[in-house]
Amino acid sequence: AAAGGDRHAPPPLAVPEMSFSGPAEALATFPVRPRLRILSQSLTEGLWEGGDWGPLERFVTEEYITDTLWAFEPGYRRSAIIPAAEQLGTLPLPSDHPERCQFLVAETLFGEMLALPKPAHDVVFYHVVVQDLCKAIPSFPKMMANVVGHMFKQMGRMDCEARERLADWMAHHLSCFDLAWPWKSWVHVAGKADNHPQRAFCKSVIRRLCRLSYHERVRDSLPEELYCLLPHKPSLNPDYIHETLNASSGALHDLQAFMKSKTPADKVMEWLNDSGKLATLGHAAAARALTVAVLQHGQKCITHHNVLLKRYEPALRLLTAPHEGTNDDEGCEHVLVAAAAGVWSGTHPHMAVVAVSRLLELGLCKPAAVARWLVSAIEDEEAAGTTESGASRGVAWGTADAWDIACLAVEGVMAVRENHNWRWQSFERKMKTAEEEAAAAAAAAMAAEQLGRHGEAQRAQAAEAAAVDRIAELEKKAEAARAPLVDADADVADCAGGMILALVKALAPKLEAAAIAAASAPSGDAGKEAAPEPRDRRALALCRAVLRRFRRQVGAAFEADVHEALEDTGVSREAAVAIGEALSGRSSSLFKDALAAEMAE
Image (cartoon, rainbow, N blue to C red):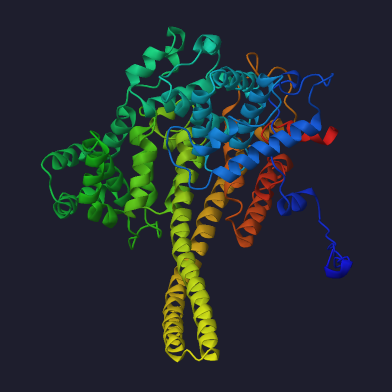
């Protein structure tokens, strides 16, 4: 009530009218929080009997958990227990069924972490929260393991990207808890086919564990039945090196000798020209042989790897640059990507990705070269050694390495854009602060003049003038920082759009059967007795995952190009729908039948 007893009448509330062309546009404008139902109702809510929770209580609790994550995530630092985990461990929830509260916390955390296309926070933040809850609450590890076990039973229905994210979490989690896990309950996967969903997941977890720990230690933590899932001990790929030796007519041996003697890059180029090897092999084959020699000699550690790449960077640039009189107007940078990935293919859990990342960081290849390499590996599997029978000679699309490399190429450009954006925003923030200081100084000067304090007024006017000068200087810096940000935005759109367009053109014509199978609801058992997944089914799933992850960065022009490519290649309706849905963001539920279940409700 206002003074005098009059009530204040609020202004009329204007609700804007909004219309949408369909569910996809509405969800894009007002996205909903992903819901993941892993456990049975009896474990999280009860059976709605006396004293049990109802749907409303569950909804409020889930919102409480997600709001706690949002409130305590910014600027979190590693300490004994991070604030988010500390708050989740002391939620004011009913105490008559504490196990239900812990089940619900675990289920909600995994639902948030596995949200598609990306979680609300950094994935590692969820890793740390789960780890700290396991340390702080003695009964929580059992609840967490129960949730993971239920997901494992439904692995056949889980999206491929979500599986890889879950495998990342599990490897990180086990590496922080002495690699302890009840593997005995999962030993049945040893008798399944390589492409069985549960076996593939276990293999992915173990592969990632070998990135974080020694091969022997990982082996000692597994039951003997699962030794068959262990990757080879870290080494080079002998098949790829042997094939490169044959393709180079023995030049690889000479290049290996040059590596040992630390022959400079200009002398290596001089030898290639004088010996006639360059004219015989061509620039692409010579670049491949030199890259293999460099990586083979620098295999001892990443430092050696980087030193040798920098030493022979001039020669690699000359060999991969566009040359007159050749059929390749774009150069052959993609050959470096193929060599870096192939040298480590199937024989090291992560070095293929690391090697390509170093090429990108040095500028020896661009993201477009990664897209070109993927296309060549998809379109001519026999030449690339990526057929099912020759997968050890190259990195095939559908493998974890290919997925990581494709994402790495785009995310590297996005990181550059973020750096430019941070620089521009820092100048904008400083300018806003200077404007506030100038306004405050002007007000102080006016107040001092009115009171006759002329000395104080002069000092305030001087402070205002200094703030105005600082504003002018910051405006120039902000304008200078804005130009590279605009260029970086265009680079991100070109990179993401080019990667998506290349994958769609190469994969869409080959994935008709996989698209038809993906369009039908999964039937039968999704756990132990699940059917093995064909190779093209996984290829389609990861193609959709790339589209889903980078669709926000793709401009309208590239989206139109994708639709045009789908029409030009004459793909089946099922493949066009599967790819179109991933690009538009319509069907991005974690489990493929979740959307249908929600529609039925």
